[in-house]
Length: 310
Image (cartoon, rainbow, N blue to C red; front, side, top):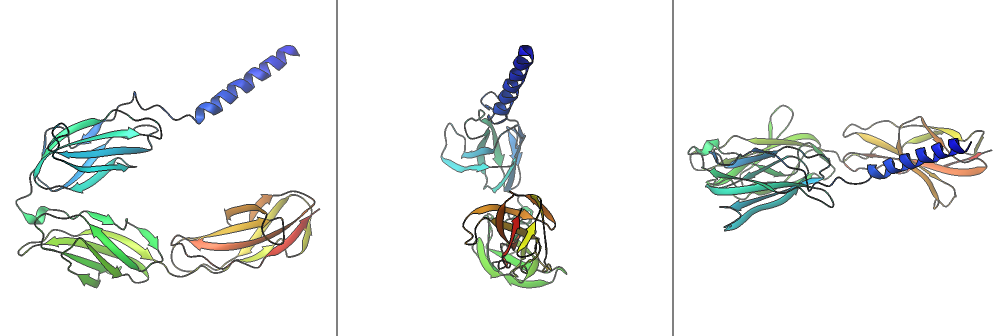
């Protein structure tokens, strides 16, 4: 019996130790990060520069810096940013640069890895590229008035901004001389695109899309447990109905309280009907539902139902 107890305690200790390790962040100080592009000594005939590097396990972000002409004799730090992915794009004028990147998490970081490169502006203005800043691609929003922003294209006199429908018909067009413009988008999915222009040439368009959804979801209708029901068993099956509204994806959330004043929340959970939830016996509960969507629209709350568990 004693031997069995010792083995059991040892197993619990090992399992507990393993659980602790699962929550310890990896020390990145001994890790290395690998640059993909631009490599050291690269000559780039473009003003839109794409920086790429390999991912590092358990990194939560990457700090990227760009100096002109280099970090040892920096006349200017052109960029200093943290990104979550392994790619970053920026427009740079003709010059010599050095860039460096490191992986990091909340407590540690890899050493920086650096590379020098030279930007030679394309002789042909049309070969340049507009880099869009915001809004992000393929977002959903309930705010129709959108400010679009992009980076400066060297040599541009103005920019042509277009909104297009699904049939590629131009809905709106503006030609600002600055790198931002605010337009009112129609309901539904719309593509927006920007190109740079000068007196004789233009670049290709750079395109993103977004969806405007201003419609609130319908209010869910609770069906079971029925209002004032008394049920047996703590595994409770909740059901409800709701007609979907065209637009972005909709989600139902169930709220369960222990008091009629709805101050003692037991459960708040995104769910689909039917949803089984285990509660405590010998208690009375109050529940209702609310729907929301990807564009942050919300329905009103449903009628509150109450039920008791024997």
